[in-house]
Image (cartoon, rainbow, N blue to C red):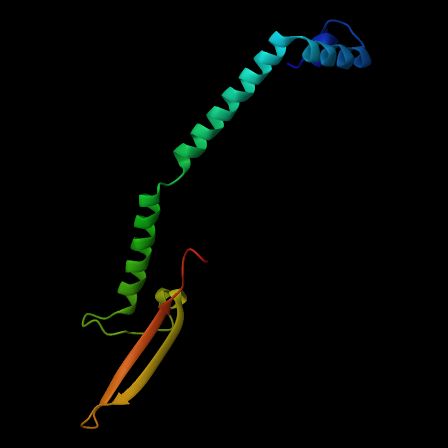
Length: 123
């Protein structure tokens, strides 16, 4: 219940109730102190709830590392070679893919594959 509501229940008109409530709040130090104590308590409860639901830095890093490992594991075969499948969910995590073929001194082809993963922080 607000101060205005209390004045209305006591029989004051709406104009008088609002005016008297404002006067009481502005001139009575104990009412102001009580109001500020309630505000501080509400703020501390809100901060406690936010802190409780937030992830710590180590939890965030752990989640991101798990995400990165899972995506890389889906892109590599058992021998560590890059495998690409358009229907794979890991393809959505790719930002860029390139393949370059070079020849060694004997003329044998050497294939270099380069993948760039999406940054989950930027996304």
